[in-house]
Amino acid sequence: MIYNFAYGNNHYQLHNYWIKGLLLYCNDELIFHQPSTQSFEIRQRFCVTTVDGAIEINANVKSLSVDWSVSLTPKSSTEPVELTLNKVLDKYRVIEELKGVKFILDKPSGSSMSYALFGLEVMSLLLSFYLIYNSELFSGVLLLVLSLFGLLRPIAKSVN
Image 1 (spheres, rainbow, N blue to C red):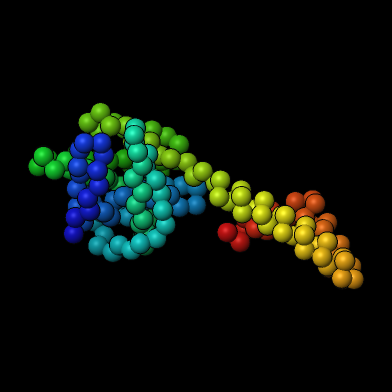
Image 2: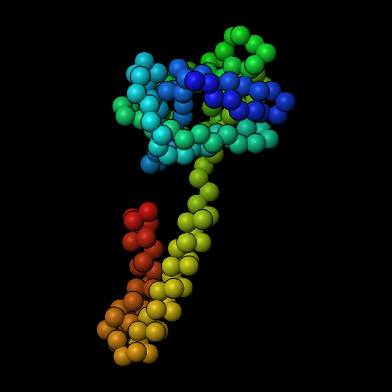
């Protein structure tokens, strides 16, 4: 199986053997699938940002290891460009330059989460006023206090 993606005018092929060594963003650290292991599944998204675009790949791991390798093969070349690192990387760090293309780990934006939390707080305020208006004082006041003091935010983050 070959995975194709484009960067600028160059087209690359990602071969099945190397798909097991892709970077993965998972909980605050980067992990990867050991290339020698044959198991591979889809899991969660990470983003490698290039100079003029982003490559997003979904990947999963069954066994964790700190050794990984990535192979990018231009279609015009038979020699793969291989990048191998031997430790867990900081997700904001520039990895290395591959043939003049700088690959940078993209930190999660979190903007959609911020909008969702703001919407949750507004909805909880409206619901608390509705409950108080309909004589559900205890529930309404409790929800109002939680909303005003921002106590729903850590609860919502833990659920997500």
